[in-house]
Length: 114
Length: 114
Image 1 (tube, rainbow over the protein chains, first blue to last red):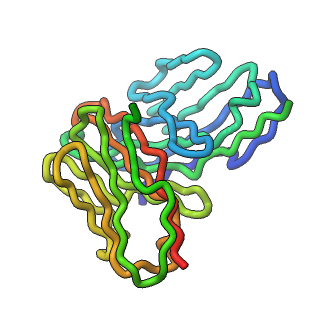
Image 2 (tube, rainbow over the protein chains, first blue to last red):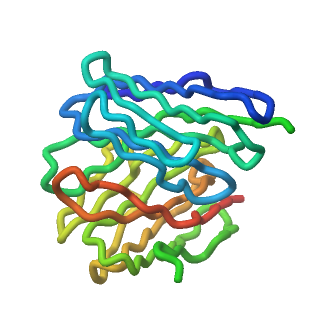
Image 3 (tube, rainbow over the protein chains, first blue to last red):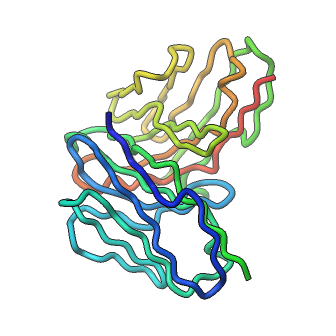
């Protein structure tokens, strides 16, 4: 059975700390891995990763994929209270020619305390 | 302009009723999706729809049926609502094919079945 496992499930840190969120996967026909941030409503896109070892970066957030060990990490440096959210990891599988849904992990609930 | 919009935002109804949720995207995407997020915040794909190709998650009861009048719209019709259908339903859209399967989500419809 295909699965995406995130850890930790919840994390509480203080403002200014650096956090690392983990996502491992065991899926058939892997195509890409995506990270989303979900606050109160819609998940919003952060990164898409398709190749191993290439770091994607956006401000204080960065992510990397290891296709050999089947995992990805999401790093957030100098955390701010606005980073508090559920961070979702999702994997795209399939042939790439049609409508491939995302298989999500259960998310990491990150709380940044002032 | 909202890229992916869903209506209604909230839906409260009695068991046994039939209801529909509407979704529209103005991103020019050719693929649309419905996801269900349960009380534990776990997001799970229900359907994906691309150029008349419908992919159904086999765990979805046949009381749920997606209907797409055109590429910009994918509505979700639910017959004979049950208590367990209470959840937040998210619509998403993307371009199909290749590795560009970045899905953009609507704000969700919170369905409460009483």
